[in-house]
Length: 235
Length: 235
DNA sequence: CGCGCGATTGATTCGGCTCAATAACTGTGG
DNA sequence: CCACAGTTATTGAGCCGAATCAATCGCGCG
Image 1 (spheres, chains in turn blue, cyan, red, orange):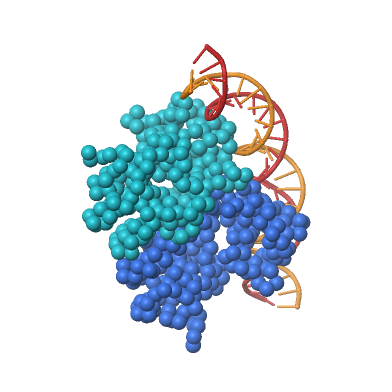
Image 2 (cartoon, chains in turn orange, purple, red, green):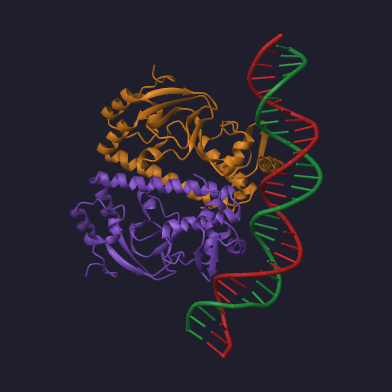
């Protein structure tokens, strides 16, 4: 079978093709394939936890994941999301520190684990891969800094608009314009760094203005342009 | 002369020893030395600007620099600081994008410029260097994420305490416990993401509680423990 | 010594947080 | 398929931190 959810084969993995691993030599892909370990994570299960020591890298074969740090009084702040083709836990692994964020599945997800030694052996040999990795880090750094500014300066409504745009970018919308990810109001609040009630009111505001439609946790994007305007679109 | 402010020699540069370049081969250091260009930047002068295309990497031989992004209504948000041994502009250079932040000298600074091609030739050849670079990126990413949480969740007073701790870490204190960097109240506000007046009041509060002393722009750290307590120290 | 920007203080306003009370939803077991 | 229990979402009221606006103040510098 060409795309096994339970035990994918790296050599032909579609998610690998769109990932930082896309330029691997065949032999390297095979190496990873033999050394890797795959697992299924149900919605809500934790993949790794802040503070723990990393032993390898997680590759999302299929699924959606949120990464979050615990902040003041344990309040969770979502740092970023990831999905098919994304990798998790590389920051701690490479810098040799413990995890500074936790990862949790948002959907039923199939996630592979590549041992540290395997990854490093490839990093050492394959310079294109290292560079690719570096570029991904750079992009993550840029978006973290961008979000720092947004969180620092925007109102709740602006931050919500920005967040919805990020979610559109990350997870896309279905053909009927629904955001293709189910988050609780609390998750949204934890992205923006605000209270759940404030998100609810801001969402109601966007709905009143015809920018989104709501049905439970499903959010329909009616007017993306307006969202960009509302978010005080920066760079 | 062993440490020329105007035109330092990479082979014996003290700042290089403490930088990501510390493990360079002698030949590589010499290569950089011949290809680099040095410049002096006065307090307030801009080293590079958000939106522009990078052509190389800046190395701080001596001095202090702030990196900031322009946010909502042009309000500046300081994303990080750097000093002797630090490098600037690597994010945009490596990811091949334009600068997403501007850099400005906070002091009279001596800063070298390494052309893109030179840097990449070393990145391709020297794997230890690449890895080192990656580790630095990872740390920057981690602190950006940490600051994201702080900004999202902390009050002005807590954020100020945190900011002062970051400044102590970054620039250290003089033997009489003064923060060894001069920032305007507005700069402090632009780190925390708040209004100048709020910083002033929060500083006055810390002073009233005997945690800091103020004389103009000079800030004396009286009680670092208390600052950690005040900042709701996280991880 | 006077100018001008940055710092400070006060008054007022407002966004957003908190707390509390429902309402709506989800999954479960009968 | 329905009732129940436990979440999660929503709404309202009241309060508070922080932004804004408007004067000074005072230091650093020419």
